[in-house]
Each structure stands twice: as C-alpha cells, then as structure tokens.
Length: 201
Image (tube, rainbow, N blue to C red; front, side, top):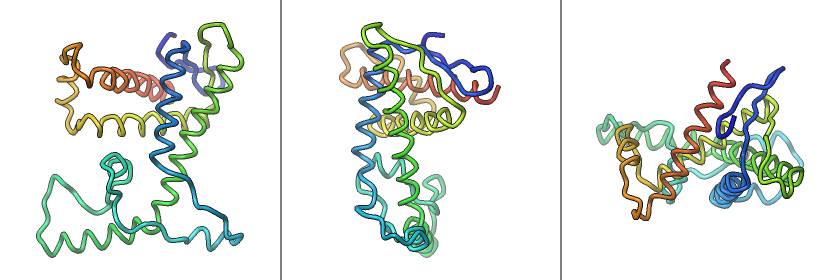
C-alpha cells in the first residue's frame, strides 16, 4: 500500500504515509490555503444575502490563482474576434462575480480537511515514523479536490501546459532547481490517480 490509495471496506480509501510525506502534503496544503486567502470577514446573518453576495469580477493577477479560478467563457485554444472577446470577458466577469466566492470556499474546505486529517494522523502515530491514513468517502472526495488543486498550483509554477511537458520533467537533471517541485508534482499525480481509481472501483 505505500504511496498508493487502496479501497476500504464499505467505501473510502486508505494510504500509508511516512512522516516526510505527511509533512510535505501538509506544508503544500497550508501554502494553498494562504494563496486562496481567508473567507469573508463576517457573515451577514442573512443566508439568502450571503448566497448572492458578489465576489470579484476580474481574474486574479497571480498565475496560480488564474489557473485555479479560470475565466468561464474564454478558450485560449480558439482565439475570438474582438467583439466575441469582449462578450466573453463580460460573461466571464458576471459568472465570476457570483461563483468565485463559493469556489474559493470549496477549495479552502478541501485544503483544511487535508490538514486536519494529517494532523489527526500525526497525533495518533507520534514517534512511529508514519501511519495509514483512512478516509471516509466524503473525505476522499475532499482529498481528491485538494490534490487536484495542489497539482494545478505546482503545474502553474512550473509552467506545465501540455501533456508532453510532463515527459520532459522526468528528464530534468538532478541539479535543476525545479527538481524538488517536479518530484512533488509527479508524486501528487500518482496519489491522485490511485485515489481516482479507488473511488471508481
């Protein structure tokens, strides 16, 4: 089971992690939380008003956040005419205004779920050098979302945009400064792939 998720009886997934792996995932999840930012400063007390609270209308300036929260109505593969581009920008701004707060909250919740489950695992296995993480079906879904977000964030920093870029990562020399980030990217990809397979089994 080391490094790969396996199904649990009755649903959910389990994976064996050592202390270093726990530390790496937790550190990355904390960094992701810091990048996403805090939630709204305060609750208005009106659930309906909170539901329709307006978020930002412009895309984030940080390239990682742009990858995590892309425009809904633009396709970089198919350049639009100037008129269509303006329409797409307006539609994307409107969509972002009413969805980004919820998207951020969901990604924040998933990252927090990862941190909490790792903290509980570390407390339970103090001094043992690692442990088996056991996730319920709901926790597995949160982990899947967080692993995907972490890979998108790292991939954005590495400027990975196409499948063939991944092949080049395997051939980086050991002294390349990107090597640790590449290894994390590939490792998280393996975890994500086995978790998907486990949940689909």
